[in-house]
Length: 107
Image (cartoon, rainbow, N blue to C red; front, top):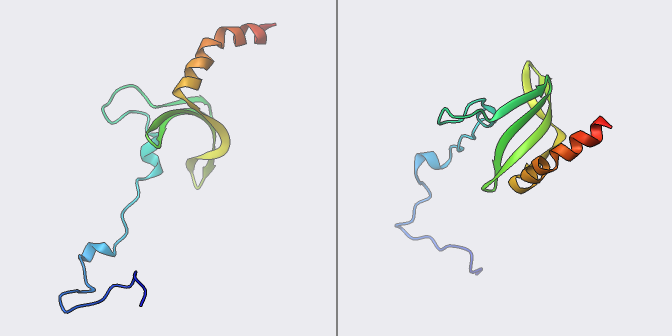
């Protein structure tokens, strides 16, 4: 008999809590793109152009600056595949070189 198979006894029951079978509701994507933080502080979404947005998100416990193109589907604005997520370190480095980039663009 395989070791993983559990022997049943009279005290074992297949029935468990009723909510065990109901799926856990997922957080809506809209909650990640709100223009205000939960505490009512600074905005976490900025619109650069109609379909290009900058948002602050979190992935695996790390904050990211996400610059992404959005598209419309059924009247809803959704994030597309085209974009980049920068770590806080990368974002700070970009800000450090921003003046140099501006000078290069102006030439």
